[in-house]
Image (tube, rainbow, N blue to C red; front, side):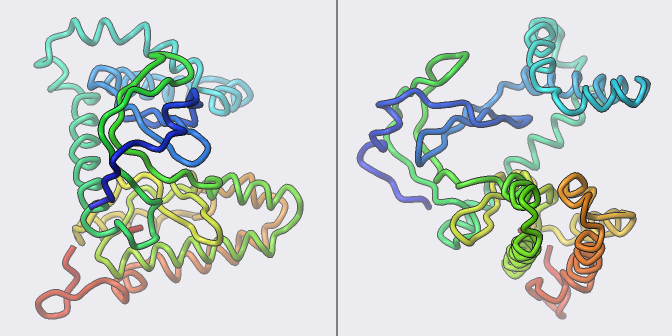
Length: 292
């Protein structure tokens, strides 16, 4: 369990929190040292799923130039579309959504998110593999943009950067030796998670952060401790022609195909059934029981 403080850090109530980012199920706000989250409603998430499905189809039929521009800056358009679509979703009976692909995707997301957060709370608190989390009596904090104020009762240590952004900055200044050091730290984090019997289904580098010389997992929603799910994901990843592209390293390593090639070899060696099983806790007759 995270430590429970008598009161929230003063900076949360003294300053307006900037909007740091957003995901499918939450919006993140930050002060200088802490981040808090606002959970999205079911109708918000359904709206985003419907919009994302339409967006993917649109990208598939547009000319490559327009499609690429749409992929680079989708957030503002998606936000507007969500506001327009949300009232219609609320008016639609829940039973209708139960039988749609969007409804199915919401159920999968919701169940995995709950399970992942539970696994992180049970196994990762205090390990250094995730940012520190604190709890405190509920307070209202002022945030940039709508809804202006939110109520929170916990906060998470703010990372210095996402791993993806850190690597982008290093690559932009030609410091590719350091890029490779951070990629090795990323793989070391994943192996540390496997030793705890946890595997992250979301390995994109934007889902990992940097604190000092550590790489940490940011969103535990994709965690699983079920070996069958792990094996299925590893089988799917084995089909990757270029793992670095799937992880978001394509633009970062565009000018250094040699670094990309070395990382891909290392990835296939480490993130493989044998590579994961080597670290996975044994159960019964030495078979895997079920972070990164």
